[in-house]
Image 1 (cartoon, rainbow, N blue to C red):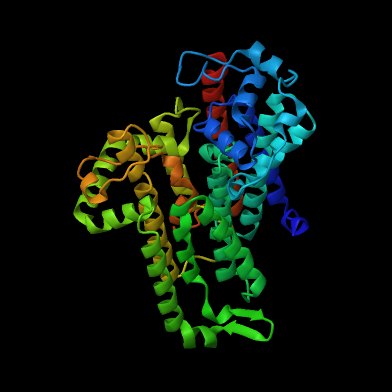
Image 2: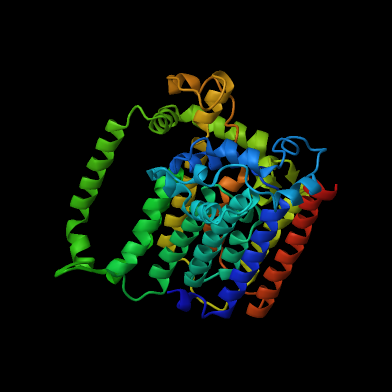
Length: 460
């Protein structure tokens, strides 16, 4: 499979460029300067049952964690940073060995592997951090490359989203987004590949589709609804053989209503069993209080439209290094231009039914992403923080908040490509011209991003 992916020179070029960008961002954004990075590190340490792991790493690294965080006039102490690269760990070799593993490790497998390699090699603590980020980046870029290889049309659009600055920051960090984002890209591209290019859908194809979706659902529940893209899959292509048994078009058409009834019963049972779960409570509340939900969505858009637009393109570190609003607007103008006027030489485009499925899926993912922050908004506004364990009446609390805060544009980027992929191409720009436009656009973007990061963290 790996050999097949990298047989394409464009995919090889994408992989190399993405790794270079990711490594550069990993070093330009100093340790601890990506939102919640210390929390992610704590979760990794907890998953491996390190004893007081986060404090040992923080003390041993020798980089002042609070120097730059929230202090926009402070810069990285270069001497301290360089010294950390060669500083001998202050913890004993055996202190950082894992004492077990929990299922939460599934959130951070690549980062954990990098960390453990650095720990077992007894490298300076700085490299425990950096190798964790490097392995996250490697997973992000490899899965994105595999997804891009499968994408049957508008590869340039997908490449722009995969290489978007905020996606690359997440992909080169300890965040579980380094797993969730490329898994989302894989599912989107794989469904398109099975729908428009593959002649038959086999058991192997379904395994490669279902397992990433299950992993994505475990990591980030709001992204569960990407499963609706499965409605695009043509029934006549199904030839899923399990031993002597085959699931094909005839079987699906014969038993589809029974299967739907079973699925609905299972969903009903799960919702009943988990009815006290906060996420289930939020969905229940925003559904029952539909008029209030519409009001909150409107107020959120009015209050935060600019911030959401900027943070989808680039607001780095602890949201202290944003791109300009003008640049964010130009980013989407160029993206729209490439989607509408460019061509990749493929005649394949969404069919009418598929456009409807994509639109519904996109709207569901958007709404679920917004609703995922409702609980956060309620707890931080009225109860002192989102880690507080408190029961509340969701229907009442919806009338105590005036908007949904805490949203960032980057939350929507992994599935925003669905919207741009369905643009009909006028093909006013040749395939070669489209490639040049995409590459020039990315070069200009990262020159600007590099300036912002240097100015914020190093030389400003």
